[in-house]
Image (cartoon, rainbow, N blue to C red; front, side, top):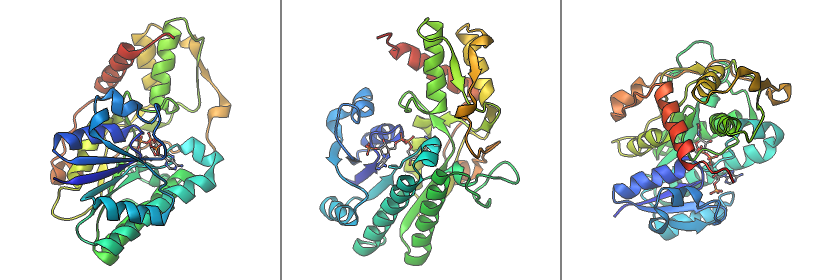
Length: 322
Ligand code: NAP
């Protein structure tokens, strides 16, 4: 039986990936900073609480990572843990860079020291690394130009993962994922925030939706489908990097218009708050997913309205007015 580590198991992607791996007969060890009701929320929501071995640990410590690898001898490591908010990275750049870079390096070093070829490593890279793009759509070959401390940290982790592959022949891959959403998304992120708050407005629990720059465009997809690409990346003959995206970009304003129409909310409830506008912002971000589709056999065909239908339906089903 194969064993897989998932770091950042309490986040959005961790529980969906754990469920997928369990379905493939893989033993899943979930690494988290702390086991609490909150960090178990996603695992519990997906009904896999008793099936994942949870380990409370510190990933910012090289010795701890080495001992975890020695103890469990994982076949696959999916490294999802990160301070993942672009906004928070502007207020906490030091902790963002420190954790997002060093934890990755410690894993790569431990793999190199223990067993170069057998442990397959997946690094959660991000479309944010491309930042100031010259032309669209973005392919794996495009130059990077990060525009936030988060993007700088992910770019560094990305190139370290590539470097270990090239220098030491490790099986290390980067999944360059574009924005992806689900019911388990943290409420501080745009899509979850606007869906929840729009429902609250429609139920008379809130007066307005306060947002920053909604004229920027992003390529949004569905999280549970994106974790399939992570799994496929570690099942190939050799390691490589892949863009995972929907292939369409839409202005954030379109999402709000769609929600307000569905929930019968007047446009006067929308407030643009200058305090929510970031120091630097990527204007448009759309990817080309043809490499993932052709090589991994990953399939994705959900439109933005198809995605919004799924997200709104699940949020309404679980919505509590308490
Ligand atoms: P997420 O919901 O923010 O979860 C990340 C997890 O990382 C957290 O639940 C937490 O897990 C751990 N973590 C956060 N800050 C940490 C810190 N300072 N020190 C140690 N651990 C920390 O992220 P996600 O949406 O599942 O995304 C998974 C990965 O993909 C992340 O690396 C993210 O940056 C990247 N990514 C996400 C998207 C997206 O649209 N969702 C797009 C591109 C890339 P514990 O509390 O359990 O330790």
